[in-house]
Amino acid sequence: GATYGVSVYGDATNQPKNLFSLQISFDTDPKLYQRMDSLCYDEIKTIAEKGPKSEDLNKVKLNLMKQYKEDILENGWWIGAIGSYYKDGINQVTDYEKTVEALSAESFSALAKEMLRNGNLIEVFLQPQP
Image 1: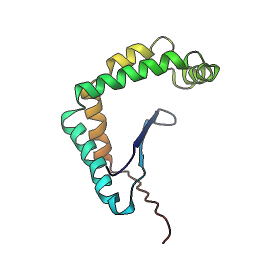
Image 2: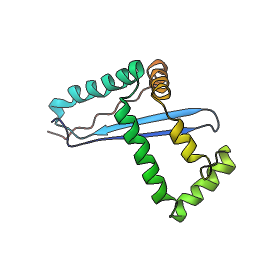
Image 3: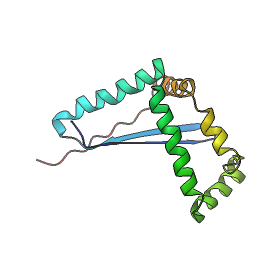
Image 4: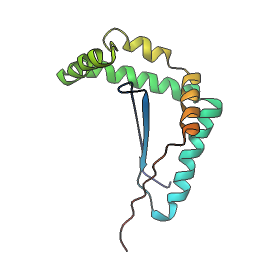
């Protein structure tokens, strides 16, 4: 393998306007960077064209629900949920499960297409000094 793991983090907001971001990070040998970089772009292109694999989408949904059930036991989650409700009008208490269930291959495909079409990209490559 070219890496021990890949981290993916997404975020979306509607204030002051609709924006989203996706951050993909990984550790790798500097000689393997181009290969890893290409694999990330290829996967986004595949999702744009075909959507995610159904088993991957199901794993994501299961993980989101598992994390949600753990998160609602924490005060910090409630503070965020209240802030989200007043700032964005999103009710994470009553709407979260419906929102997760509504996630579809088509919605991920549309998002990936928008990311590729948008072209607003920042790529950072950090390497050790010789």
